[in-house]
Each structure stands twice: as C-alpha cells, then as structure tokens.
Picture 1 (cartoon, helix red, strand yellow):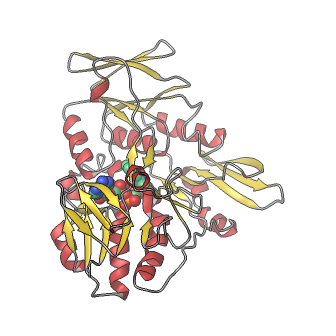
Picture 2 (cartoon, rainbow, N blue to C red):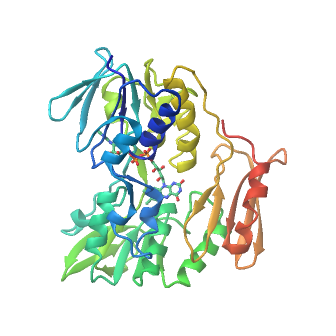
Length: 382
Ligand SMILES: Cc1cc2nc3c(=O)[nH]c(=O)nc-3n(C[C@H](O)[C@H](O)[C@H](O)COP(=O)(O)OP(=O)(O)OC[C@H]3O[C@@H](n4cnc5c(N)ncnc54)[C@H](O)[C@@H]3O)c2cc1C
C-alpha cells in the first residue's frame, strides 16, 4: 500500500496530517517539503522583530519530532518536480519517484515578484518562510532605515514590526491609502495615522521604478520623482497560489488549484487545501480557512467524506500601533459602507442592498472590541 502523500509541511500540510491521525492511526503517511520541515506559526514572521526573536526561536517542533508525533515519514529539502496522476506518483527533482494512493497538495503560495530597473533590484527581499525570515533578520543587522514596497495587510504588519524594533520605515505603494484593497478609505487613513505616529513614513499613489545600490544601501527612485534611501528593501506586494505543479499535471487550476467542498481536485483522490487552493471559487490565504478545511479533509482521507464549511472569518491585522479587524467584502457584493469615528479609529460597516451586514473594517483599540458581536451577524462564506 503506497498510502497517503502530503506535499507541504506548512500549517495546511501538518494540520491535515494531525487531523487524519485522529481517525486513522495506521495508513502509511509521507510528507514532503522544500524546507527543513520545522513546524512554526507563519503569522509570527511579521511580528517577531520587535520581540527580538530569531528564526530558531520561532520553531515549535523539528521535522523529526513531527515525524514521531504523526507516525509519518517526513522528506525534508526535497522538491517535487512533477506529478503523474495516471501512474499515481510524484517525481522529486533528484529523480526519485514517490507513489501514493491519495495525494494532498498543501504547497502554499509564492511571493509576487516585480522586476525593477537598477543594479539593486535583485537584492529586494521577501519573507514567506522561516529561512526567508532568518536572511531578512541578518540583513537588518546594523540597518536603521528600511524601504517596504506594498502597503497591504502583510506590508503594514512588517512596517509596524520594524518600527517597533527601532527602525525608520518608508512604505511605498500605488494605493491611495494602506489596506486599499480590503477596507474603505476612512479605515485605511485611520491605520495610516496610527502607523505614522509610530514614525512610519508613506509614499502613496506612486511606484518604485528603479533601485540602485548606493554605499552600503540602496536608492529607490519613485515615479513621482521622490527618492528613498534605505539599507534593506522588503517587498510585500502579495502572494500567488502555487499552481504550476498541478497545472502541468492536468489538474484544473484557476487563481488557485480548483477544489470542491470536499477539497477534491478535478482528479479523484487528489486533494488541495491552504494557500494553494481555490475552494468553490474562494482563495482565502489565511489561517482560519486552513483550520476549517483540515478537519474535514482529515475525515475524508480516513474514509468519511466530509465537506468543509466556512463561517465568516475576520482577519486580525497585527499592527499594535493601530490594531485592525477586517471582514473583507466580496468584490461582487452590492451595498454601501457606513463609517463612524470611534476613539482614535473607525467602525466601518458594509450593508448589502437588503440591509444585511456583509463585512466590516474596525480600527483602533476601541472599535476592534466589537468584532465578535459583528461577526455573529455576518453570513457564512461556504
Ligand atoms: C508574514 C505573514 C504573516 C501572516 N499573518 C497572518 C495572520 O496574522 N493571520 C492569518 O490568518 N494569516 C496570516 N498569514 C497567512 C498564513 O500564514 C498562511 O495562510 C498559512 O500559513 C499558509 O499555510 P500553507 O501550509 O498553505 O502554506 P505554506 O506555509 O507556504 O507551506 C507550503 C509548504 O509547501 C512546501 N512546498 C512548496 N512547493 C513544494 C514543492 N514543489 N515540493 C515540495 N514541497 C513544496 C513548502 O516547503 C512548505 O512546506 C500570514 C502570512 C505571512 C507570509
């Protein structure tokens, strides 16, 4: 029996393995990962600098310990290069093949990269793994000014974290205000004020055109004519689900790897969850959807087909200078925002045409306290 093969040891891969083992202690289980397989909480990556945490300090369990806990074989530093759905096997970059009866794709997302002019462009950093964080932390040694490209959710978190670690931060992006794609303007501006009060400086409605090396650091040229000097440049312009492996194998992919509510791809016995997956049209690259999907898939893999359901799942933006809770509104939703100032922040509610609450953006200590009561009023997602 070839057993169950899980590609990926992030939150999705490890959580579904744990859920499977609650119902099935004996099916042979193998997990494969590009990295060292250490178990850690990825959201900590954008909160760790201000707490002076090293990458090692973020590790909760080693791959060996996870292998023992799960009674599984964990293949670390192994890249899956191709998938043969007919032969039911994957091929590693080393040439070795691994057979499976059932396969789970939990291969996450990859940072979107942008090509800039200039000899400093190739030094732009991204942080989406423990190893990235270790490199980033090392690069920041002795650096007191950082340029951050991308004023979205993860960009704002990194900006606040770097400010909290005593560095000055220059945030650059085309949006009119931070979190421009998630919240209405009043909420974004309230966050901007909170971050500015921590010394963060914004260059909005403009983009980086060129990055030149200059002394020990970089000079970023912006389209509006400004120049920004910094010792390190971090990009946080978004993540894209890893779909290439699935697409090359002939699985249906759209924005993510397409799965139904059973987390099953277009090929029976092959499943996907986490940042790589598009569940009934929804790509939700956050922790809560994984914590809902993994128990369902664990049961399905153990022989009890179980559909996933998604309640409303607001996201906390970890910006201690000005906390934010957001329940994003679907781009197709019809309705309008109403905004009230609450303390130093805002309470922005989106009501649909029928009067139902469909989303919210709460900013500041006082307004964010209401998030649980409001979440109870939201419709389920799936
Ligand atoms: C800085 C940061 C802060 C965040 N903060 C929050 C937050 O506050 N709240 C929240 O809800 N969400 C947050 N998120 C999102 C959340 O962390 C992710 O949704 C979640 O961790 C994704 O888990 P995953 O297992 O799907 O993917 P990943 O953790 O990316 O795991 C992917 C795995 O696949 C493996 N892999 C990929 N390709 C291959 C291959 N070809 N062969 C073998 N293995 C492969 C990798 O090695 C890895 O083990 C944050 C994300 C980041 C980057």
